[in-house]
Image (cartoon, rainbow, N blue to C red):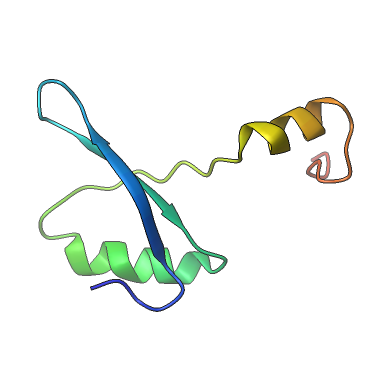
Length: 70
């Protein structure tokens, strides 16, 4: 069901069983958008890009992966 290049990593469901949080990974945002479009009649989606804790620490400490100021 997932296109090549889009990986399902894990998921969590809130205690009320109202919402599911899925952790997905891809280098191509279009794959995620296409996958969400196929399910849009059954679910609403909110995308929150995340980074790992080591990546966040590197950014805080001034590492080279910091996003450009804008």
